[in-house]
Image (tube, rainbow, N blue to C red; front, side):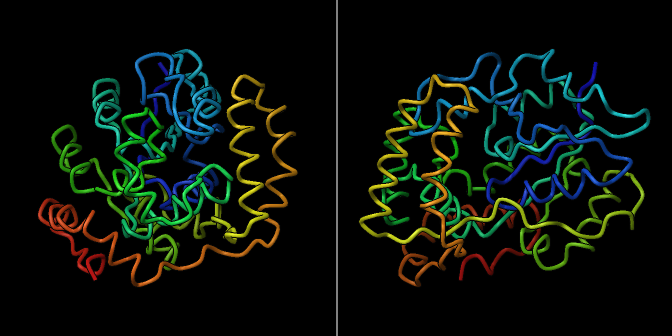
Amino acid sequence: MAWPDFFVIGAPKAGSTALHAALTAHPELFLSKVKEPKFFLTDGPPPTRGGPGDAQTYREHVWRPADYQALFDGAPAGTLRGEATPFYLHDRDAQLRIQRTVPHAKLIAVLRDPVERAHSNWAHLRSAGLEPLRDVVEACEAEPKRVAAGYAAFWQYVGLGRYGEQIQHLYKLFPEDQVLLLRYRDIRDDADATLQRICAFLGVSTGVITSIPRENVTTHVDDTPAARALQQVLRGGAWIGRHMPRQARGLASRPLLNVLQREKRPRQPLTPEQRAALLPYFADDVTLLQEITGNDYADWLR
């Protein structure tokens, strides 16, 4: 049975796409060509309801066991198989499914300042035209209603960043020596040393890969009447196109996204007021994370 030997399990908007691309270049590793197959998020077909764009995302889940295992059929003999689905860290049931299926698996989690992660997550959905709320603080306040309405996990700007609770559950299922915790800033600022840590953790040759590409970078979208009109059209198209083939949806939405993201400006920083408003969502959980791991994350509390 072709199950993975390792997983990049989280967190979303913490560099998992770039890390997947970097690890793919190692000859002793084989990562699925489908990044984020999401297999362990369900026991069967994915849900059918959710927020804008969720129906399309659910249709991309590789949820049939035979289809999932086929992702690793091309692995050369002796290589380690892996995949990257950053929602596994947040999803407690996914953690359980992984433990029951491949209890020997090694897990890599990249943690990012949860306030910055939430803002990047919100900006990502804004730049995709899907997030109607124009302020990240307002969007976080709306999270409980969205969860109750069945929105997909990527809309949980707060929930996805409460790593203390997630790691606490993970450590009940896996020995700590099977889990590698990294910081997003290490991927960004010291890619070479971070990759050597990962290779040593996985038990493959070090010094083979030394750089991590920039991938899935969030584009800033100005809050203008024209941008709001485009976003409204894209959200409407997401509802209408939920039954369309992926290629057809892409052909229909790409010209609008090109206009919306035409300036290619990086995500604008949080204001001090926004950070002060969001920090209380995470302060107790950061303290828990420090207690569980023995690592220092005090800079996230400032």
